[in-house]
Image 1 (tube, helix red, strand yellow):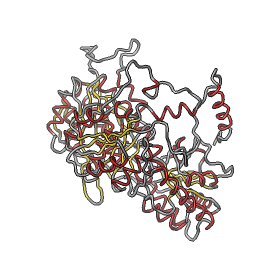
Image 2: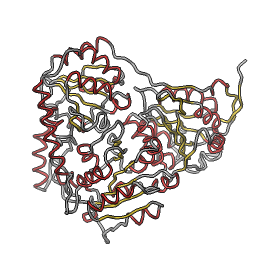
Image 3: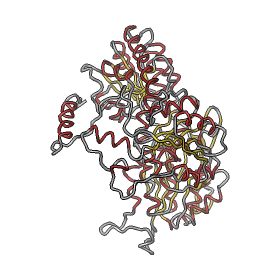
Image 4: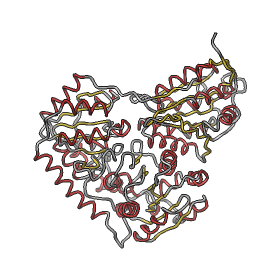
Length: 615
């Protein structure tokens, strides 16, 4: 006879999560690092009580913003290379919907997070309850249906026993390298409190070890044959290299073949910046070293990358008409993009197979030397733009100061705006995962919450957040959470008095300076935000510095501070690094009364002719 235990659905949920394990470097650890929770009427009674019962083995963390706590959970998974993860629970209504942006971020970036929003009453007796929307034509709809397109797996729990198959399916998605992404279990609030006789076997501990599918041998041979014919091969390292733990195998493959490598935003730090054949960033925010190779490459080995438009220059960067793309990816959807030769499998295992198949072959010496020479030229250009200046500093000069003051042995967090472009080019990462950028969904407001999640994953690391004033104003509440939890961050806040990145894009497409910088937005009073005072009010140590030299001194001092430190510096909103980079498709109006727009349109029409339609 099956042994059972009577629990509420919420109790069964939390007990199950506490029993899930992972193995990292021979050590068995809890798979879930904890649960982020903001309680409301839709989750405080049942889920709140259940979390209290398991508060030691499944810690609960209180945040100040639902979107931010989900960002922190996602960053925790990213910093753990998807080997550990977190859950996040909210009440119904606005609390739930605040996590939708984070769900989309996780979906785009292929990152695991378990979202547990409360939902309306399954029995519908008290309808409409507080914060419930009503669809005039569909009685089954709630706001949580908004999670469907941004979840890898979505389920609404309307009976207590449904949590059993739902959690089994959820775990399969969260731990699968190909399916990996956000899971949303929408928890009807009455059902959370209902009891059921659950089988004890449901709560037996399980250790989840990542699957490493090997590629098909025929696909390996086809890829190796293409590479052996290459005169100008190039590797693109994406985030899949890091998630697979394939950095060592990638270096071995490059050492044997002499093929230069470039890195996407997600793949940056796959290899150290000073690795000889690491050309650095590729694409719209790429280095001149990487992009000149990409323009000429006849075979492109794309490893663990979605080949986003920023990587491909909106599919104009790879100019060699006879090029072949090889897609080494655990997800067939990504492996076959742009008519690539598919090499479906784990990045680490795939590189091992390719390395064996390519034994004795190496790229032409002239191509390898061309790559090394190009990197030397880029390094000179990068040193110039990051050098100290006495003028109002650029983002690049602030990056140089952070690098000089703190070195590369930190975990650097960044997200939307101008900083990802500059950091992708200029930051000198030295270890896998030391560069932590969110540029898949380009989410303003991710930075500080992401820094919090990364610090939870890497408590012994110095975690440095670089953020613009626009993102800071959007979502800064987790500064207080970091102080409350004793998780020290160093936050470098670059204040260019508005949305400087989009202002530059507006100008580049012929637009007038309008509604981006404070000075160009409708105002009666020009905003002068005292960011240092604001950060202090949240419990952080904070100061505003007036020069690059003062910034370096403040950063060195911040290393010894006992809690989160915010350092503010004014920057020039109009300067960006001209070296490197590539065209990006941003459609310009076809008709305008302004000559600047018409001129930009003419240039745009010429540029789109270079796109490889149909590839």
